Length: 112
Ligand code: AMP
Image (cartoon, rainbow, N blue to C red; front, side, top):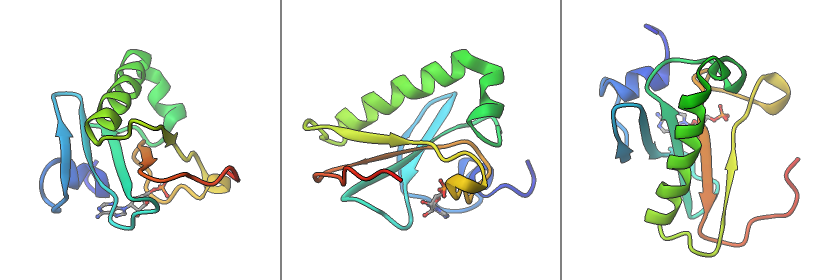
């Protein structure tokens, strides 16, 4: 996608703080962290949100498995939270499917 921020990050056209990369996924630190550890994990293929990404359920499973591995590599031994915002009511601001990994502190029990 020509006009997608995260596609440009994946392609290296916009700088990012890379945490992990393989042939299917790219992970980098959120520019506006909401927790001591805040990593975004994105599929390299462009899908607008998790519903769109359900076209490739094997990829979704792979991406979520990678989230667990990345959380472990970030030292989140005591737990972490995964969030994927989908659509306006969830305040999705970047329309390239991504999972937020949040951790490194005791997170609020209020998720809404
Ligand atoms: P969402 O609101 O779920 O769509 O999340 C988008 C996330 O992308 C937000 O947490 C932003 O802080 C983050 N973000 C926006 N631009 C950048 C960037 N250039 N590098 C890293 N994270 C970004």
